Length: 115
Image (cartoon, rainbow, N blue to C red):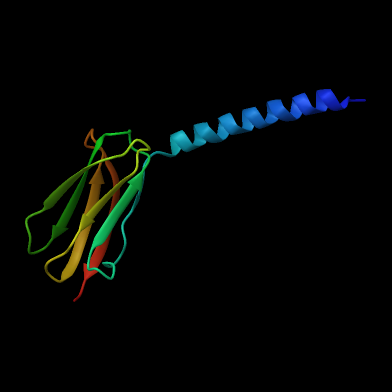
C-alpha cells in the first residue's frame, strides 16, 4: 500500500517531469508567424510572430508585382515576440516572407488590398 506522503512525492515528480517535457516541446516548436489575409479597419497589415531569440532582429519582406521589394526590420522583445505594421499603398496581391536574424525564412503568407 502506498502512503499518502509517497503518493504526493510521486505526483510532484510527475508534474515536474511533465512541465520539463512541455517546455522542451515548446522550445523545439520554433518561431511562429501570423500574416492576415486582408488589412485591418485602419488599412494596415500587422505581421506578428513569436519564438525568435530575445532582442534579435526580424526582417519582413513584402513584395508586389508593381513594387520593388520592401524590407521592414523589427526587434523582437524580451519574450521573442514581434509585430511589424505595414500600410499597403496600392491595390493588389502581396506576398510576405519573414526572416530571422540569421537569414532563415521562418514564415510566409499572402494578403490582398482592394480599396
